[in-house]
Image (cartoon, rainbow, N blue to C red; front, side):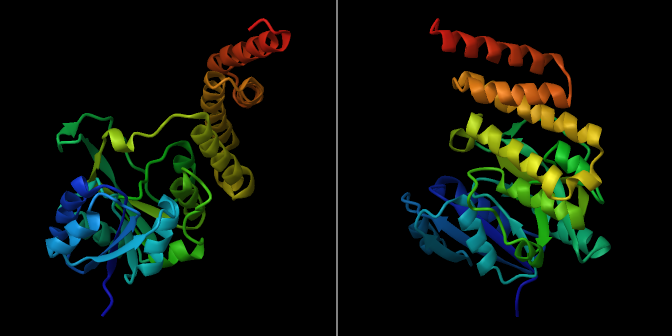
Amino acid sequence: MAPKVSVLIPTHNRKVYLRETLESVLSQTCKDYEIVVVDDGSTDGTEEMLNKSGYNVRYYWVNHIGQYAARNKLIELAQGEYITFVDSDDLLFPDTIERLMKAVEAHGPDVIAYGAHVGIDEKGRYVKRKQRSLPSGNIAAELFEFIYVHSCGMICPKKFYEEFGGFDASLKCCAFYKLLLKLSVNYKFISVEGPTFKRRRHKGNVSVRSFANRKVEFDVLEDFYFNGGGEKLIPRSRAMKRLSQEGYRAGRCAIIEGMYEEANRLLSQSFRRHPNIKSLIYWTKSLILKTLIGSGRI
C-alpha cells in the first residue's frame, strides 16, 4: 500500500548532518510516510553511513545532475499522494507532518500547507531571527512580495508538482520560488501555527549575493508578473515596488562586479517603476562610473 506522504531528501556531501535530519523524520508522530534520499554525487561516505544505519530509507545515487534535477528525480520516485521536502541539514519537529496533514484534511485536499521555521547554527543552537505572520488563502500578492514558503516545512500534493513539470532545472537558484508563484495562481496555501522545521545555517549553505543570483530572482518575478498571471492578481503599485526593490539589489551587485551598463539599465528602470532615493543614488553612481570608464579615467 502506498504511503500518504513521501519525505524527500536531496543531499550532497552532508553526511555530518544527514543522520540528524533522518532521526528527526523517523521521530514523527505521523507514521504514514516513506523516506526517499537522492544523493547528488556525494564523496563523503554518505552511502556507507546509510547502509550501516539500518534506517528504512530508499536511497539513490546520481552523478552530479544539480540540485533541482535531483529534486525532480525525487518527485519521480515518490510513491506518496503528498510530498514534503527536507534539506539534508535541516530538522523537522516531531509533529511536523501530523500538523501539516491536519491542515490539509481541514481545508483540502487540493491545498498546500506550510509553516514557519526557526534558525539553528552548526551545533543545533537556536539563532534569533525575525518572525513574520504567515498568510493563508490566495497568497499570490503576499508571496510576490516576500518568500514566506520554503520547500522544507511544507506539504503539497504530488500532482501539483507534476502539473507544472517540477522544478526548472535550468536555473541555478530560485526554481522553488518560481514554482511557488505558479502554484499561487490556482491553489490556496494554508499556514499552520508554530514552526514546522529548524533551518540550519552553516558555511556550506550560505548563499552568495552575486549579480547572477539577484538577476535570476528579478527575472523570475518579472516574468511571473507580466507573463505568468501575476498582473491579474497583484495590485500594480505593490508589484512595481517589489520589482523596483529587486532591480535595485541586482543593480548594486552589478556595480560591485563592474557591470556598469547592466547596472545603469536596472537602476534606471528601478527608479522609474518606483521612485526612491536609493535607486536614484546608485543609478547616478553607475552613470558616473560608466562615463569614467568610457573616458579612460579609471
